[in-house]
Image 1 (cartoon, rainbow, N blue to C red):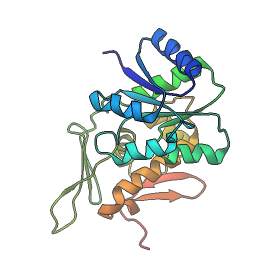
Image 2: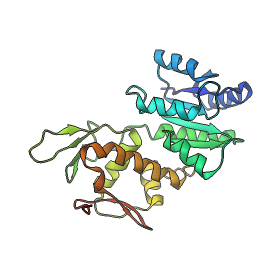
Image 3: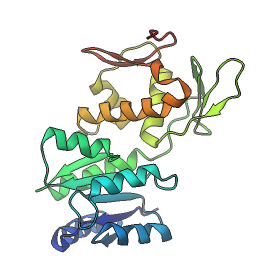
Length: 237
């Protein structure tokens, strides 16, 4: 199956450069100069990945990404943020807005294609590890379901994006162990050299936010100076 990619970029020359390289790499590509047009196109058919420029007329890419993440239909849509902003704080803002990865201009077309491939690979079905349970959390990889099961309460489904699901699955398959950011990159992202360690922190934050309404976020612990773990006995606060 050919993946379809939508480029939202108001600089025609940059959009064309990206489109040419992605087309040569075997992808189906569409372009939009602003978010309104992109939204209209997505209402007809969702792309497999969105390449989104930060600075756009009318509405910024950051704001658009936040809106997509708040919408049930588009909350799991993979987003690659493209921008001239290269400060660490800007990268964090881009990732916090909902982007799965971040590329700064000027960029290498080969690197951009590699990042696109990496993001799309992470959307592939996860390995079947069978049913997993840690505390109230129950995960079934075959049905891609996560439940919060507390005593004397009805099981409640927890909605997670693909990367957050993989993170939780890996944690639950290896409970009580401390996992460094490098280890998580290797085992959850697949040793993709273009992904920065800071990305791990952002997805841990997203995972906790998804678990928080079910009082399950406290089972994901930060081990200062070492990494993260899931525990059956979280420290009470």
